Image 1 (cartoon, rainbow, N blue to C red):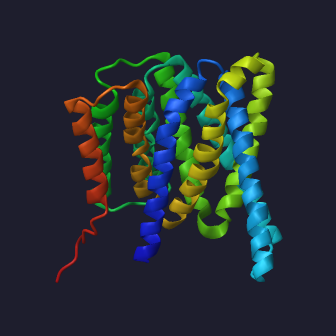
Image 2: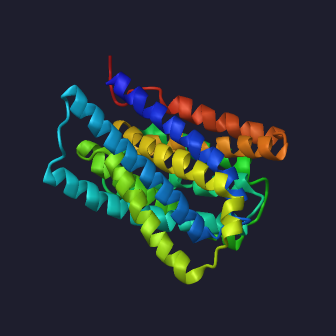
Image 3: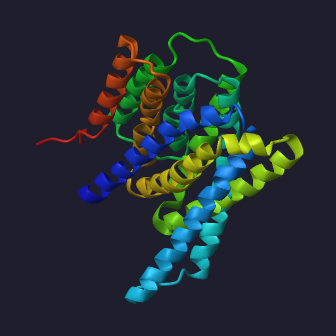
Length: 302
């Protein structure tokens, strides 16, 4: 049980790393590639990579004699769950890219607002009757303060910020849905379906609302590949695996480390250095995550 929980947290940590570094890529892509076009391209790249993984995995299992084909019920759950996750993810990702495009040059602040899902996930979980240990909610509050110190730096809200707030609500819904699906569905298959749906829906919006240029896409080709393979295919699959082994509220807390990674990545990319306030924010977030792992016992007597 401990090993399973630890592996789930490691998956969430890796997902947070890839998501955090992708904020810099998204900020760069926003200058040359329209939002829906970028989302469609990265999602199709992610879906293609994941379907290839499925094929290679099945071929390997057949060679070893351990292959067990998915039942109709498993396929139905993967398709339905993947479609629903894809719709939430498409809406959230589109608003995120629009917000980032509006707030070009502030990936740290964008990461903070996106990471507000650490507030919405436990609230939604409570509505659904899933309670976390009391100290987890305290850790969420401390992490939220840390996020504010790390990313906001006294800035006021903009139209892009409002888009990102709505995006964080939709990301929370996607996390709750993944938590609900649990271990009943294959993580890679679910992730592949959700990104295929995201790609199709966002491509439709791109055709009607945007006029991308080939030069613009070629100028940001590396951002598409990075976001498509590492942030989409790898990170979201790690998120699903991690949430299969970690409660949603705790998983969202660990995943919020993407904001720390985003700020560090933007500092490196933009040759900036952390302020005392930003360092304090990082320390608070790390402290909240460490304390969240302590197995406090409530209402028990020796």
